[in-house]
Image (tube, rainbow, N blue to C red; front, side, top):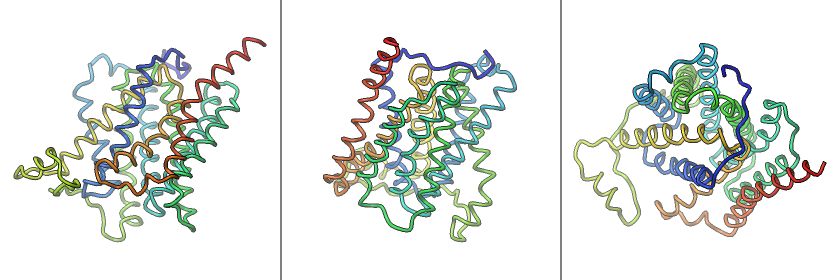
Length: 331
């Protein structure tokens, strides 16, 4: 096949869903790594995409590079959409706060409910639209204590980031049948890196407060409440640059592994279900922050209520999908 005409097969196993939740958990861990890094977010993403692309370029089999030029170009530009998604995500957090950014991003499921059927030439499913709206409500309840007024620009940027996420996820749902996941990842990470490099002059002028771009990786003593053997070990090793360790963990584990696996899972799990599940990332992130940094203040009654709403949306999708198929058979 050399055209975007394939749709995901509906043959996901329990292990596939476990893998999906596992990679979402890892993405939740990126906030922990980010807290230990000393360089800003956009520079971090540039390192992340460049290293991921270079590492994968060395491990991909020669036969997996044999793709039509049209597909290679499409994958490269899809990577630029990924880069734009990350840029608008971090810009939303910069001009507003992380919570408003995440509320905006939570609309990705809603946009996917419209974009995926359009790409696949299918009817829009009302229950997917409904679950997308419920997800937004759930994350609003989780994050409402951190929301502030007059943050419209941040919310708009978060929503743009969500639309871009829905778009590149839907496109990847097509590409996953045309190329190997690692090949897709290396081409898209290359496109994302180039896109971010092109954005750097604008970023330096308007988003750094006049301080310019900071690409210097530093040695920073890691913080962990009450100590931890791994962190204590890293802190005692001389000439060890902690930024380099965190960047490589971010690039290899949180990007190469998770992105490739997520693309491979799109062969069996729909884009909507994938983006619906990804909404658990901030919840996993809050739990991990409580474990790693003793930040238990966010785990109040609103957190548990909102988390329950999000979990209800994720877990109820198979039921709604089953009922929808039954109704079609009766017709």
